[in-house]
Length: 268
View 1 (cartoon, rainbow, N blue to C red):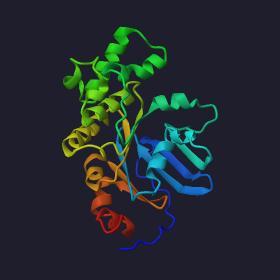
View 2: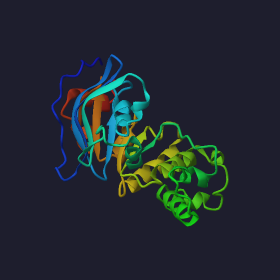
View 3: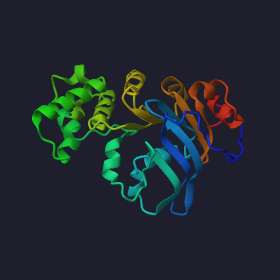
View 4: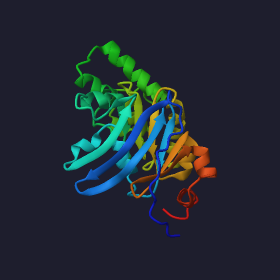
């Protein structure tokens, strides 16, 4: 089924003001002269999981990478509008990007442990920041590995190379590394796309556990995964936000025909 280009969508806010934590306000984004995000306005609540869904090229990963300004590393980008975290603009010229990235951790599509020991993977960012007290590092390693449901599997081989772990364990190690600095937000860009079903199930269980501590935003192409792990779902098409609501409503009773066509597999 061919789907028409999306019409302009109004601001979509479904959480109460005291819940609004990540706020996207009239946000547009360009790579050079190519606009990839169009006038998006919506908010995401604290300590919930928000899933971004939509076909390839719809801008969901680009938007995710705006939240910790990873796109700053690309030449020729520019934006209009704003993104706020806890009421503060992430584009405030007085804001240090390094401090933002401490608040906003990220887990990538392909697990990418450093060629170091399991222990050193987790404490790497702390060492860079000048924190070297062994008792503190030990505490962070155990806390992070417990939070990522990996402690029991690796506690007796913390000095072994991280590259000797299975794919699923590597991805959980990357999650442990991302939360070692205790960020407020955890971004996950298709964290299960390179994993088998068993490892995927463990990551999904972990997401449910982690939202007690972190506000999570996940990009996924897997509709069933979005339905299983998220509290809110945003559907994007051609760089525009088509519909954003409670996940159950998006999948069971969407308002827009484009959303229904996508979640039912008619296109995408």
